[in-house]
Length: 273
Image 1 (cartoon, rainbow, N blue to C red):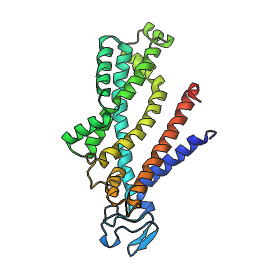
Image 2 (image 1 turned 90 degrees about the horizontal axis):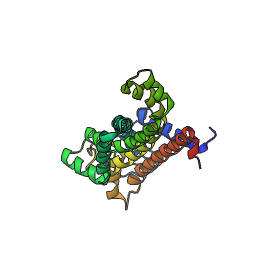
Image 3 (image 1 turned 120 degrees about the vertical axis):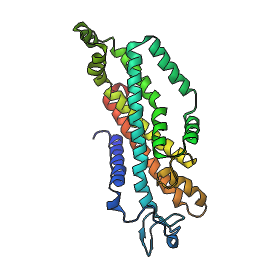
């Protein structure tokens, strides 16, 4: 409560997630319902179908409905991809940092090889081969971001493996697997949560960018990236089609980053500026 920016981030996240999960309570329109007689209605305008808070698009679909329903997909993709990245990155980073040797060298060289390719180009290539789809997008983002988790976890374990409690665990006969999961992993919760919060924001931006370029999710699925791609064709005369989806992406990413900054300062006061 004392750090106002963190509080603002929490409020933004709760608002966005709440609107997305409870979309039916805040809006009566079907996000995919086409009503050509109401096409390109301006924000705060009323038609025979009802009141359109943020206007309608080129097919007469309500912008506000598409934003809050599309939030479900964008958030699902981002959080699911982070879960995959965390599982892969934490597991591989823990193995590399604890056992060291040739296994550490091989895993880190693989990570460096993947980092040598710009992620957006790598994702474009994979999605162009696999095709657009929800599962494909989650897998691409999940596999593409494991490196961040692995490097952070490896660095932490290189320090933790030399601590007294690890030596004590070895002295009483604990096996390496038990030492990793029972004694070391609980100490990694803070950095993993911090990295995960920032990765969620990055995934939201990446999903929107890939969908905007036409290789992300199917155009029939209402997402923020899809709305941006559709709205660019109407920018000269219907600015609201792309402006409001862009704003919700901006606000959501800002809220997550503010919350991530608060988490970092809370768990590690040495990083405060």
